[in-house]
Image (cartoon, rainbow, N blue to C red; front, side):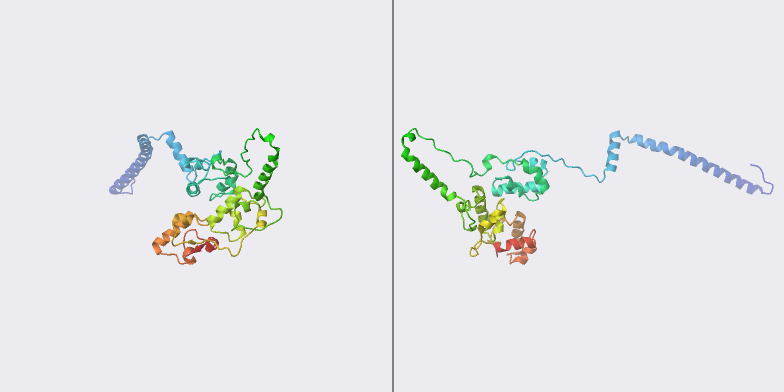
Length: 313
């Protein structure tokens, strides 16, 4: 350092000390910046990360909001024998699988694809995919009236008895007489008619007549003719052949006395609604009227209006 004549000795020593401090600070900053990357590299060596882990980490960062797609399969199945794994593979929700198991326990079996079509949550899109795949085993199907009745073998002596032929024909006609269809529009009371009378309506066979009578029993009686369309798939022309007599009372359900199984056996009461009624009775006592039902699960104003004529308290 060149001496400055106008500075005293003490001032020159102080300036020299300041210069050394600046030089040491610059050297220290350089050494620190050079040493830090090495320390980071050593830490990375202490904890090596495999290429697979790096890929997984990168994937997890890029797919934070990705939703895994469920694989849905389409194949023939029988809703009466398919297990839960098979039903889930078909794309049905777990709660729909539980509904199928409840239906089996309550009604026995699905007899037609149309019954499976009424599965809760069934959409047009889902039915278009699964409907053609439904296979109902023969032992679960209803016997169709169109099936031929077993014929009795003819005896060898029938040819020698020509006088018996008209009698056989007359007997056959008498058997078919009750099942003949109405030729003109005839009103049939669906609350009183049996299966034989219902089968005389064009478009109604043994299966549909049995379904109408069985649905009437579960329902407690029809209130209007539109309800007959709920029993099974029926053409709209059927409505012009049926009527509901005004003096026929319906059978009512006492919501304060019946068990959960008996309540849910009614077509208008689901398992969850029946459970809500039973739990309300345990917690609060008897149900006094419609106002108590409005606060229960699943009892919307439309449901209550439809169910009200069948309830008593």
